[in-house]
Image (cartoon, rainbow, N blue to C red; front, side):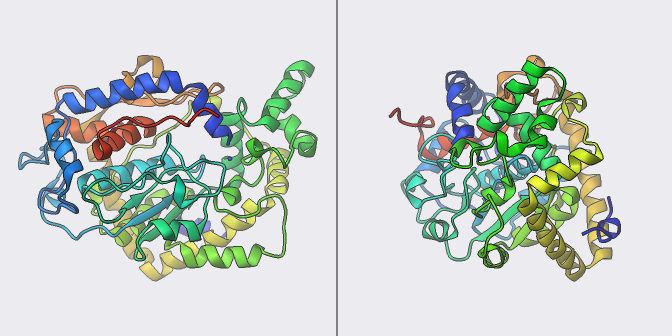
Length: 435
């Protein structure tokens, strides 16, 4: 959908899901980190622009990581990555659920690794005690030799005041929103075995056998949804919840909440205009086209995507009214940013980005949409109980430099997170303490 056409139409249960599979993912993390450290893969780092010359960088060098050398891959122009470049400002990325945020996070992980940034990582596991609101106490300590955090992009529920206690004053704040109908469908499919309201609807649907769980839930959502159950946080207005808003109902603070979000975020990306959003992101963070190249992560097979008829769409919109309002509000702001940037300029740069991305995909990716049973553990996405998450196979016969770049391009969130955490602290991720 083009900008012109668009202008014409204005979650602790993830904790539980991860904890239930912690034994499996710990093994996957160990294997992934070991392979990354010993396979000859190299980070896309700029050797001339080290952020912090500190001990955790030395651990990286001892573990086998090398900076990009002058032997750039022939099919992709890495000169913009290798040459001296403007330093990236500190970044906070609010990673919303099922909006394409894992793809953005991968881009930021690559950027941070290249810049030798100090990551603000969760003290335990992969997220900041979600679904609790973010707190500075959830952040792991600064590594030796670092004076500040440069990048925070793990899952959390927004609390701006607490974030400002952790991140520098000049940090850039970014998030991404997706059209609410598809966001809710994706969340229902992905979390129907972990969110209590969805579990109950699925159970009743199986017992009756005449309706899909989604349709059954939407016919009478209040019969399944208990607002006092923390595990139901993503079952209604999930994007609003991630952004720290009281997502249960419209209330007098809504306009104030929107004003605070508008003031806080430098850019709210729109998933339906992903490439356009990336151009605006690149302008904010001083990134070139090669650094903005991506593959879509956490994708499902087409047959796992639930079809939505008109009645279902209306029901989703009615149940997620605040998300609809939130999306429409920031969509309009996005269009205003596009107009200010210049539509002709934006379209030209989007075309260049797509050409660059296609070249990099041809160099890196041998197969797309690969079933997890065909993937090595290093590049196998974490699997939900109810859907299959597809991955990528990278090309063989790549140079050492190309292999390092391409592996990172397709690396799933959990493996990349664990790898970067080990680089920074010299230890594995800590599990959530047992109570």
